[in-house]
Image 1: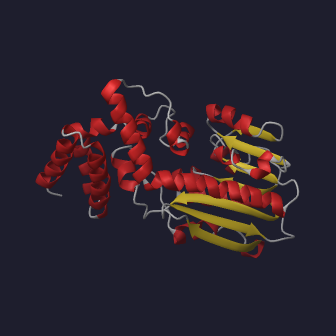
Image 2 (image 1 turned 120 degrees about the vertical axis):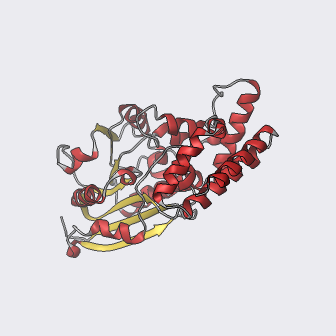
Length: 314
């Protein structure tokens, strides 16, 4: 990629910033990053990111709360539960850490990323889909048992009729983030249990668990190699009751938001398309699977795969 093109692009964005055209600057960056990544080799893309972060405009966009938190990783990883909360309730942002005009800029960029960012819309849609599936489980099974792996804050339960009506028998939430578990515990207080454990603990059967009617993992597959992802899928499928369903969620490699996530937020995921999702069930006995449904939500950003276990199989 030509150095002059990069310099001109970033200088153009800087000019928009200096002229107070903050939303235009953000939109230009978001769209151009996507275009550059699409037409670059992996090596060229990483080289561009290094050049971008050396330019003054990079610091400007870190004023946006989501981008700043992802880049700084206060809990050691980008997509922590606080970040998701910032996407879920973006109209309820608490007071900015900045003052005066800088606070206004920060709020505007925060609004823009939630307005433009495909991942932000997709994460809110993912939350709605999960809430719906929990409700459907309670309609399908009386007092069902549900397991959430890498549960975060369990915000999907806040809009869930089954939770409000207390029609869930048992809800188990697992995460390796103790701070996240303290929030999740309040969401399922009275009918749930939280467990501090990692994916490896689950795979190695170090966590004593019963069987469940519905198991889902909201975001951990985005960080797992194929080997670990297949092993986790096998273990979770073993934990299903006959007729139970396992929902695996993973970012799609065609997501329009990847470039911004990598360049600005330093947020790197493992992406899987439909065929790669299908490959995760290779180690499951075919005769135990009743059906597999794979779909992408409306923002074309997040893949869902639901695997149903046959009745009579344990």
